[in-house]
Image 1 (cartoon, rainbow, N blue to C red):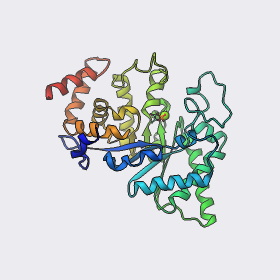
Image 2: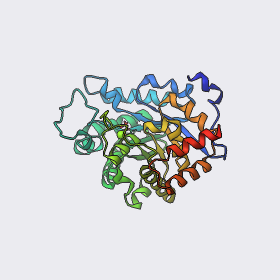
Image 3: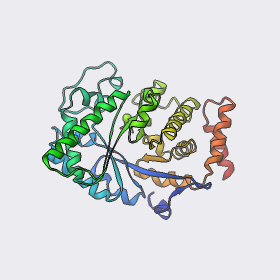
Image 4: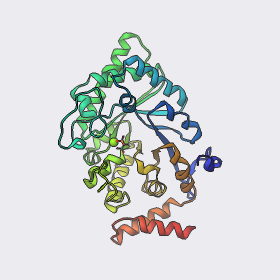
Length: 324
Ligand code: PEP
Ligand code: MG
């Protein structure tokens, strides 16, 4: 399938009306890295670090992690890699950590909540990332931030780790960006100051949608019940885009929906300019983006919204079909 899109691999995802959308890939294993070149991705928009923890039967050591992250950065060369700190709990359970007996794990003790309550592992991981960067630029984001102070506390851990490296005489990253994933609706309504303080935001569409519709992403009965192109959800996403534009905050979208061409085109139409997806989706998404007029899609979305449609999908599909 990659071959089918080989002819556009080096071309930008620029729409007919001249809007360029940057396409990045999601990764988590060393085996994903060759896709950086074969897919035409502009970088790794989401590196899920928990996968390295999940495939072992004991906690990895700092030096092992530093080695691994360094190889990821080597493979990426000048391209940016967004390392997401450990996102465990809920559906991702480490075999060597005491299981939590929680009535609602998706709403439970997970991700940055664990990291802030028991900071040992996050400190080790941040140090491994700084050592791996070894003077190169570094980008880190924290998963599942639900309110401002969690971002501040996690960032303070990064500042401490930096200071420690400085005292030890180790090279510091040439540049450091520290962002948050926006995957709980609460963060979409955080104070303006929050948007100004983060270096960037990345929407975790899988979790954000789960919590927006109160529909478990792991539950077959409900996981496909609500459309991502539902007007309420798109309006919410558009609000986040606008707040980011107002505050000059770089924004990306990295849930599975970014890799679905119709969804991707609608996300681009409401203003998302950075999408991160599985590598195999880059070709199909780029192919469609290059054949559409985003301003026209936006008009179709707005019209469906005004006429009270539940989802903009039928209107967008009709429009695309009429375009051929
Ligand atoms: C998400 O929630 O959309 C996301 C990108 O992270 P994960 O699927 O790993 O929770
Ligand atoms: Mg998530």
